[in-house]
Length: 185
Ligand code: HEM
Image (tube, rainbow, N blue to C red; front, top):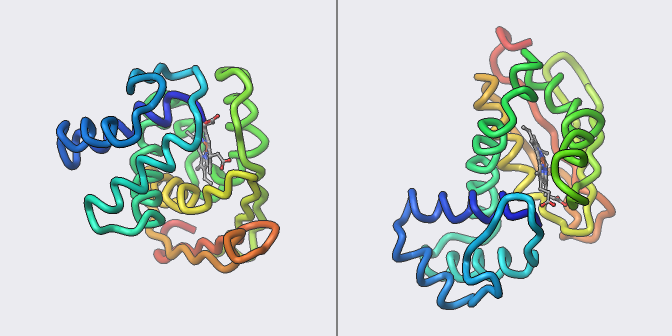
């Protein structure tokens, strides 16, 4: 996992809860980096998973819920760092359809060997987009948050349902994203 994911997680914990929470996560997980993460370097996925587990015990919130909140926070950070991807599109569905073939392709040039998921989209109707997620890391709750973060960015109210999940033994996760307001169609 790239350092940008960890630095953003660090920001979220410090801004939403406080620096003492971040310090106690470092104390519990004892990352080899000592908590000094740089954006383009790789750090073990297990460190993030362990921090989420401790954060869950500290806050009483389930790990899946924390990952979805983090996805929303991460989207905002990625879009701020790489504004061209969001200014390039005016519609949420057009944006989501461009993740695999455009955005993550560019990410491959900007970050050395990133671990990216496979995302395919199918427009079921004017209001509904079906998005399939595949990744050996099974970070579908992070994807859920990233989708919600993108919807906020494009001022589009959506209902997101997670209809199939890799954690239930499926080979991919299926999301159904429905626009609520007709003005966004
Ligand atoms: C501005 C738009 C975006 C940028 C710049 C971006 C960039 C990135 C970067 C840098 C990573 C980390 C790679 C690594 O750790 O090695 C990543 C991972 C990921 N991206 Fe994107 N991303 C964007 C939008 C999205 C959206 C909207 C989704 C929603 C489906 C998404 C799904 C994911 C997921 C789930 C991962 C974690 C890796 C995995 O699942 O295996 N990304 N992305």
